[in-house]
Length: 183
Picture 1 (cartoon, rainbow, N blue to C red):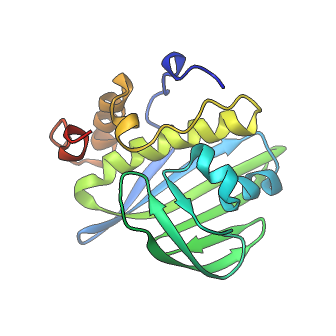
Picture 2: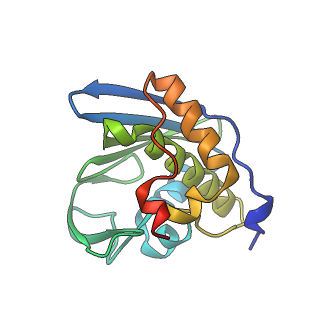
Picture 3: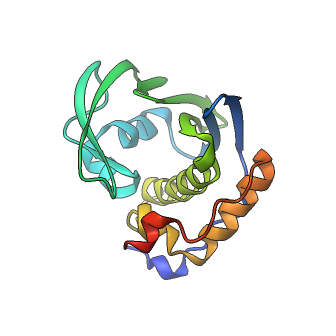
């Protein structure tokens, strides 16, 4: 496992928002050097998800049906309905959709995630870090999941939140967030 202390996320990039009322949609794109099949496995297999994603599931996400999804830092699992699982192209559940497109010998991964507008820059920063961890996992150099309060403790977290807030034309949320103060 790579030492997380050596990890510094790059600048905010590859994100946009669609604004509709209080719930906005974060659209985050990342190009990965791995096949859609390999990326699909990382998006759907519980063992892989535990290595990089900000949530855990009690079953596989690669088939239509119901699983329990637990976001890191929350005590209660959410009953989650996988409504689309078209390997290795589209995965959709609750307020999240993943699109995978073969691109330049790898995969263009697009995340569509509905988030309350007050927390859109936090969501973008969190997914940015999770995507970095995913990329290292797929490259065979896992560094361990960095999510929730652990991500917020990174020195670069505030920078990413501010950069995304500027890109999205939103205010930077108060720091530190109440959730992080409890950790």
